[in-house]
Length: 351
Image (cartoon, rainbow, N blue to C red):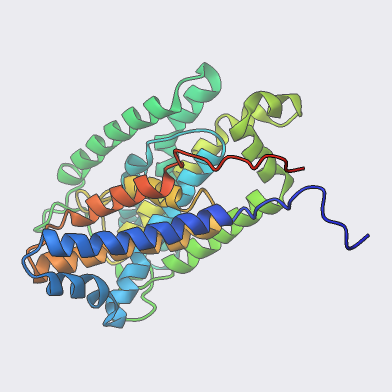
């Protein structure tokens, strides 16, 4: 019996698609970096060194990339939770910004030390959830379109955060448009001074591992993924569709808010105007490149962090525009998530 051919081929591994996207993204990003260096820069050699040498030439720069990737990975995990449940939220940027502002506010007022750090992280996560709550409740009780409501509420929260930082919560002793500095004892501890590395990458990796276990190994996680693909079938199976209709949106807000708290409590030391810096939008691209797989999120986040670090260095040492990374990331996302236009026709006569 062991010599018999299987009646059906084994299903492909669920990690094949994320690996394909990651490999394609890395290869295309490298190709585009070379193309931009040759076409958009007068010193191609300096531009290439800025991308391929500068980010890796010191432990400080490498730790900065790891730290930036952590913020992206946590925010992308918030995107993934919402997308896995079929909710296409665009509120991440506002949720990250709100988390940073709330964490800086709480960290400056709470008792200095580990208690202050925990309070600040909790406030940041709750602020992200608060920005996501209207979309979640609108979806649960009115069937509102999450795509539209999350975007509108996010934009309103960004304007409110800008007003708070530049107005009543601004630190008059700071030359920047920023809030009061959080006491050093309430900030995330530095693991490898003088580099900016904090426990954030460890927390991000742990959260991605927990999410992988939840979606891959637990019955509720599989039920949530099924709900995201077919809500009617999930209801017929008796799954808690009412909870699934709003709770993942709220959890996504918590994770985005936590990413914002990491931003404020890391090397920034407070919330400055525009601190989110597009992290919420980039997180969507990270999630797409990772193929909605939690285990692949850290690697996709590192790719984006490398492109950002390289473009900043290239803008300093050559005349390459600092917006080059944005263009490269956009093209990488388009290529990595595109479906083949033509599929290989099945061979006739196969049984």
